[in-house]
Image (cartoon, each protein chain N blue to C red):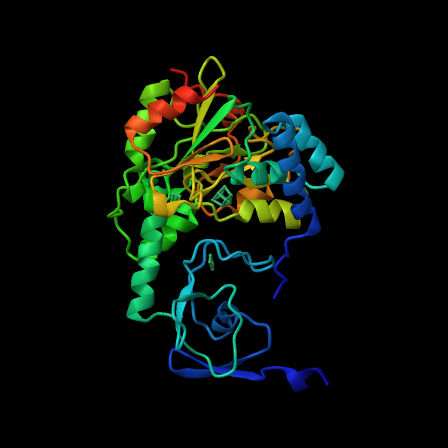
Length: 144
Length: 230
Ligand code: SF4
Ligand code: FES
Ligand code: FES
């Protein structure tokens, strides 16, 4: 039976490099991915695969405030849908979109580890919990 | 002597005692003994991925059904390849694949050479009971060598592995996650000439109608037209 190919060192360093780019540019530019692929001698599609697999990495520029609403089961059961909808109507964007003024981006994410205080969301590095539609507009108003 | 260590593992498949060599998979032993287990994502000459689960079998003492294509045999294993539980599960797996697969067999050109359709027919899977969301993608027909209709893809990863391990080209990769998972070229660009040469290996491996050789309409009308006078 042929050997199952193990995850190699290259695959580990792809993630590290992509994380660095994410921090530096706020997103991962395509030519950066091409450089990573060339320097590690893997294909561009593999690098792109890693970049699109993790919800905290992104391939397009995002707004200054990235809102990540949790959509995992515990939050879902505590009506995360209502939270998503109130952010949507507040900002007039759908998940995956950015406001025209470049202030907010909305995405959905998996569990952020705050299930006991569900529903939860993150804005950049801060976590907001026990959300209600009322709280949403207050929180959004405070964002610069 | 080589033959000293062959056939050193004995096991039971469907109530008959069979033997195999260390490192063989359940699928390989079954095949050697004339037992047919359907497969979809398995390529004999390449590393198994266990992506499709169609090859599931029952192993006594194991909590869940196991995939025959990548599970190695062990001494004393008791395996059932066609028990009611196996057949029902296999059928459901095919049904789920069919439910999220956007091909409409009735109008699909590849219907008669489609492995998925054949398996579905063999297992007597009718119209899927499940209404699931479907993915629709634009057909990629930029390349003169391979046309991709990813709406029909069932994510078996055969094209990725064939391109990587047989053609040694590594054109395809998997991208996105969960429901959005897709086989992509570069940063999800349509397949083009520069990255892909005309080996066409992926087309032969694709078990569905997702990958096809592009049709050149001009070629269908080569030769002198037939003119019947008077
Ligand atoms: S395009 Fe065909 S071979 Fe490639 S993953 Fe999809 S179904 Fe499998
Ligand atoms: S499920 Fe939302 S924080 Fe865990
Ligand atoms: S053939 Fe075994 S999991 Fe697909």
